[in-house]
Image (cartoon, rainbow, N blue to C red):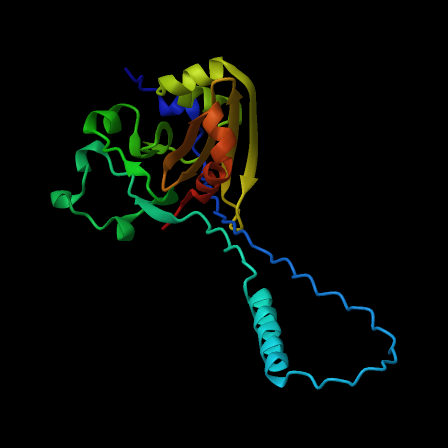
Length: 258
């Protein structure tokens, strides 16, 4: 069961905010030039005592045609491998609505217009519906997962009434109070790194990377609109090695809007 923690123990009361941007990657292909045919060494003329014979014009013409056709085929059958397609993503618009306003008015609010944050979702990932209980206890606002690898996921939590981030170490430890999986990951971690960065508008956000023998996690935390937003990307260690390009992309795509 998730534990509710006090905002005053976690954060100060001056203004601040943060965001991050996404990136994407592409791959290219190349072709290999075909080999050219070698020239044959010319023969010296030999005198003959026999009566010379005129060449068979029909045979000569057919031979020339066949050689020309073979040359065309040789130069047009080079296989050019297609370029690998880049990963496709959709943008999720999160509203960070309170449990009391869960689903908006009538359950059909315009999320894009009222969005407070966005992040990218890889093609094929599925949304897990968040209950009012989860939203009310640990502040989970949205979650998506890879249906082929269900423990590979991204989700966002938020907490209201906060203007500025506390020190990095305090923020991470207190986030873990309401997230049992994060607690276990930190407890078994081989390494935990953190950094503070700013976007082009000077908005501050914290970036954490947690690596353990069993799992890997990337976390972005920022404050905006008097709320704290924490975006999590998690995957088993084996899947992290295979999918880290995609996982890093969705981690970097998170930012606040509006």
